[in-house]
Length: 396
Image 1: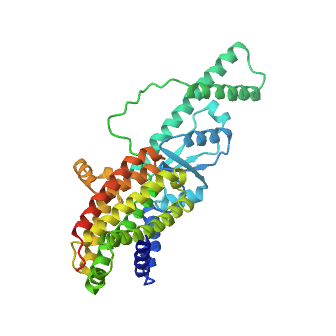
Image 2: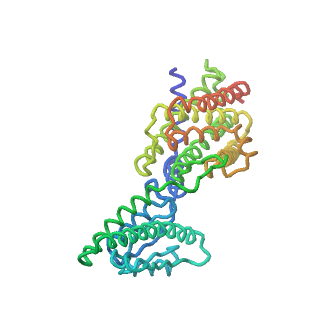
Image 3: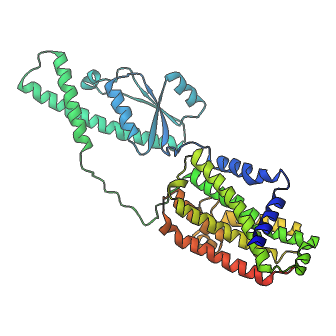
């Protein structure tokens, strides 16, 4: 055990012998995570932003904005007319809904109330916003029509004493009609096809993907350490010591895996504290998948180190291998974007399984039982790669 720890400490000192190594250890992974995630805000609202100008400031206009808030298609953003005009002119707003000043119960009872909807030309989001507004207005109009019929029927039975009484009765009837419209049975039945429901969060994908990318590449780069020490004759000197190659390889892997786990914990902490991701909900499952991923990557680097001859060759090959595996493993783009054939083929890569396990935790909240099969596959990769590395390892 002492030999293993000594070798691990030696490799750690060599890895961080240059200050620039810290750039690749923590700074660049955080930068790429934030950039690819599109920021560090909360979970976000994927609905289309609809700029709303409420000139009426009436209970009826408030009800309209509240109805838009419940829409699954648009997210109302109430602002002033000047700001809405500026955003529309700069094309930062796809659509602007203007609620006129006379949008209140008194005018609704007597006449239909027009709304102004400005749309960017040839803009799909604006068209979606239009359909959402029409759907909400349809419900408001239906409730108003029911309320007007109710007022007319009541007036036939007993005329109202004043206009104020009439408006008060209309307001109460409108509330009841709105409740009836909201409780109306669904006339259209939604039938989903066999397309799988894909849960996607760019922040979670970016955090998990960049963690795997920036941890796998240095671990695969273990091959360069072997090539360097072989070139320098360090490994040749091991022949005169009672150190078996399995002990030496294990010491190297322990040191690099320990460093990788520290890097992983820092990136996970950044995801929790800054990006508000759910990394910490299943700590045991997270620990298992992080260790299994690091072991698989380190074992791959050990295996690769038995095939390369020079440090420069190992460096280029490890970077290329890590980048390609990260790309095909879904670390940069959701794996669902690839053809089905590719999705099946990349299951031979440890990055695919590492990404699957980490997304299961941070995105779907899966526990230990759900990620254990994924961890078992990663450990299987580690056993195979490490076995090949031990069998092919040469001091010279």
